[in-house]
Amino acid sequence: MNDSAPGRHPVVFTPMRRAIARRMTDSKQQAPHFYESIEIEMDALLAALASHNDGRTKEERATVTAAIVRALATALRAHPAFNAVWNGDALEMVDAVNLGIAIDLPDGLIAPALIGCEGLDLDGTAEALRDLVARARARRLRPAELSEATFTLSNLGMLPIDSFTAIVVPPQVAILATARAAERAVVRDGAVTVRRMMMTTLSADHRAVDGAGAARFLADLKTAIEAPAGWLVARAEQESTDA
Image (cartoon, helix red, strand yellow):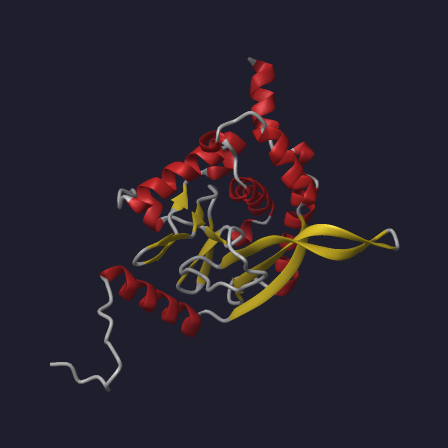
């Protein structure tokens, strides 16, 4: 029997949708969120990616997401309090960077982990991302990928979104929301010029981390992304040299 008002149609939640609703409610109720945003200039990174991908097929190209993952892995190693989980009333920092990647599925959002992504170069990261997304859509994720994430990236850069905030995925203590790289007027050396800028917002659990530490984390991430020449493909180039 349908007891809904005329013109209203009840939606039966899938188990995934119910789990998302429960976890996000728990997070907002139990974790005191705070938010910090920073604009990152993307021109150098996009140019470096274009050069790196020159001559490659679409399936072989490294994406902006893969590059952000690499930068994040480096920043998280330098700021281990953000690569951590909140266990009851204590913070547990994790050696490996198991970066959760938000993936949009028909019945809800899932954020499986790239396990140990700090050890991957750019192409390895891109390949691992393609594999993770494909297995998420095929419902073939491994248990550790569903339970061992230490930080999450939610990237909406492929959509016309200028900025957004995300909810921390428990028991993690932070999540990064990245929007599109859009042309904006900025001042450089006293002159107005156009640059492609990305608004980046960190949501964090104030029980575990503080605002000053979050600001330093974002500042280091910004520095890395805006000057990618020294790290973006450094590991791959070194391996090629050693060979």
